[in-house]
Image 1 (spheres, one colour):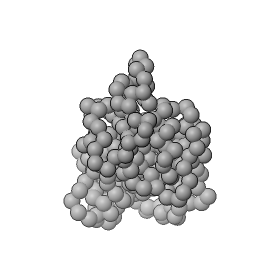
Image 2 (cartoon, rainbow, N blue to C red; image 1 turned 120 degrees about the vertical axis):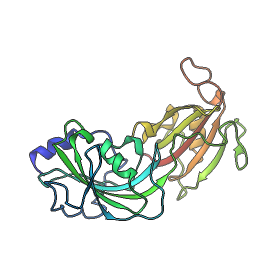
Image 3 (tube, rainbow, N blue to C red; image 1 turned 135 degrees about the vertical axis):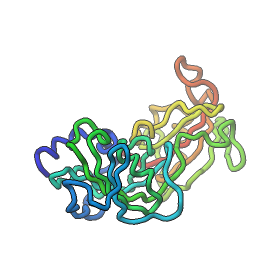
Image 4 (cartoon, helix red, strand yellow; image 1 turned 120 degrees about the horizontal axis):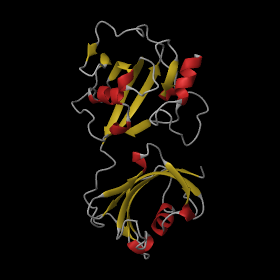
Length: 271
């Protein structure tokens, strides 16, 4: 990596510079070989009106393209024009999953052209990247999967329905995805989660996904409904919680009132 690319790596926008829950022991897979056509787009590339040049390396399957704030799972490597690797998911632990709207403009435009399984090479001018980028970036991206936006209110946002369990405290929950193992967090342990919260009329008021990264906290630092509910979960589990006001913000000024609904995914315990 050159001094210039090292400088750029420190200036990457939040998409590429997110903190991870744990540092990987080693690269997940080898960083792809540096393309030979870094200086200019390949002659077979197609250039869009915005100036993004794309070359299909592998066609995807189906007809679904990501749109809006869909969650997309992506593998990618970014090079600077001198051949240095600026960033790569090979160096990140686990899948790279983000709402489409958080990607830099050129990458977002390219991903919209893809279906799951597709692999695309992009030549991206600075205007579609970030202000500190060189004149162009070269990017290989594979679209692994598409999932619904984490910001969309669930159909049962107004109150717990079929499949929900009610605790004596008034907290209701539904398991959306089971976790693994047997460990659950203690009431004062630290956890890392992704979450989105809505009022019962379907208005989103907060989400870790808008921040581009999971959040970590001690369970005794959050609302009572979370302290209680997260102790029921295993790592990897995703629950929906209906939290009555007495277990939420209790009418605190400036906070959402009434019963609140949260989708919470437990990512780690003790991190």
